[in-house]
Amino acid sequence: MDTKPYMTTAEASTHLAERWGLRLRPSTLARRRTAGGGPRYIRPNGRDPLYPSAELDAWAEGLGNEAVSFTAEEPCMREDEGERAASG
Image (tube, rainbow, N blue to C red; front, side, top):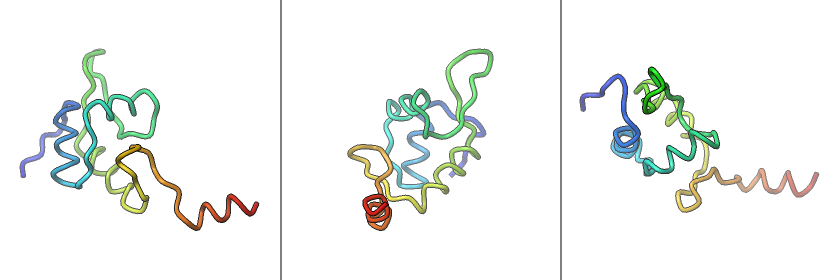
């Protein structure tokens, strides 16, 4: 698969699904630009955001150790983290 150096939000969504199995809608990526927790992006000349492909891959790779629920589209708490939080 040829990877473009910079991707639009729609292209980034497709890339994450095809390469990493992460099904994030473009609207979810847009929301994460505002709320945080998404991949890094740039806005050249104040225009539409572009995602550097290397940043997308680094972000997706970093999620490899997190449990993610795509229904809520937020990281889930691991079972042992919940026990620690409850005990103290």
